[in-house]
Length: 332
Image 1 (cartoon, rainbow, N blue to C red):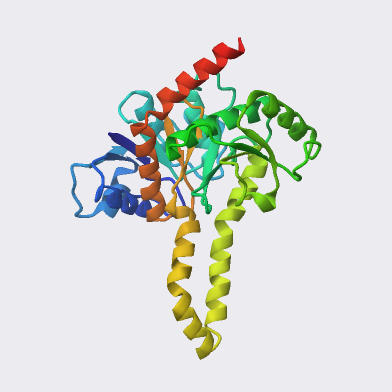
Image 2: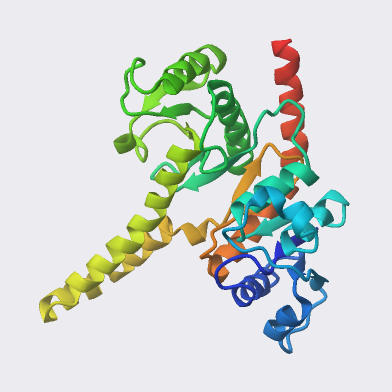
């Protein structure tokens, strides 16, 4: 299996990306193609050599604030465009990037295209919980969406959850400001009715306070709501850790207590650390494209590559195509 990795994407590229790639090949047979400036990548590789790592030179950089829709034409030799071209041309099985999300989304649409029947691709993210974990979709690809888009987000995310967790027919909930069917904006009222009619596994609205405890496995919302939720969820554990560290260092008594609870706190932090779960797949495009945080460290890059590997191994794209062929045929 060959996975193309955007070596120039992210706040700390290419050094952090190279470190993450090195960690992958310690436990996987996957071949990694580092896409980006060859000299910069080689500098961070140093004396490291492996037949599982190669470099695909890409001379142009895409900043985090560049309009994503222009990248294919304005910077065809960028690591994002070149990496996704490798997937399109069959020279790589997947692409991973911590770079400009809009650029990855737009380039994926232009080069890979949509899976037939999919109106809009969406980003799905994993949220750890006591029941194992949940998928929330969309988390940023579609700040403005319609009810029929949210229905497809639910269908695509359910399909991905089944692949990732091995649980068929996951329960679906609609993130909303109240549990009652008559709560929310016009979009969410319409979506509630549509999901009720189209999805047998739909269990109703889920309030923000119940996201971690709900029986729903898949949580659906527009990209504006989802992006706000996921960024809060990823940052609260960091803030809590800082507060606890300050509190437990106040005096000798609190330091003693901190020593006793340290193993529990470390396990809790690991459970909710977003870097443990890596990037998120761009659902609905005709190829595996994993998007991760611009602030990703080596662990997040490593786990994002593993996420891409799992998507390829489970034939996610092929099975999604088959699923949407059935949905389109049944609705005709």
